[in-house]
Image 1 (cartoon, rainbow, N blue to C red):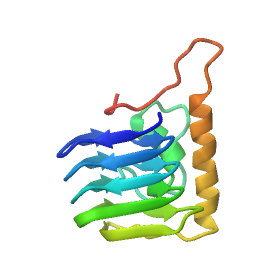
Image 2: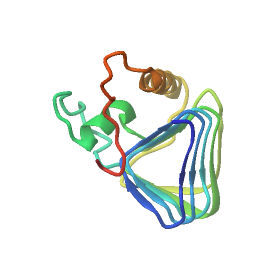
Image 3: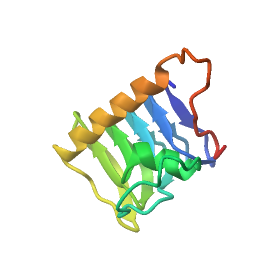
Length: 157
């Protein structure tokens, strides 16, 4: 979709791929990854928990229909990625088990901490990943001629 907002104290299992921005309300938690074409913003004390290990050698097989396999296919080792900025407002937010990158932008501001691995990925690695996210979003937005809905994640469904 275009944009996503997780309200205060909300918990969402699954991953978000947004055409513009993703906003986390105070103490909101995402159990997956957040990939945005412009910005990811945390209001206060938010968290992202990657449900698959960052050091996984290969994604689960494409025949698997689990939420984890769908998220891993697009997210790879990333918990957060934006093309312009990632902003952490208020007290510290936490990224657990995944990497973070901004590309082609360069701005990550505010207080954050990694838990259980993860780091800020710099260009050119983040540029290649940003291009793959852009392609995944474009593919997700294409109307399906066969009338079949594309498999999506929504609250772990």
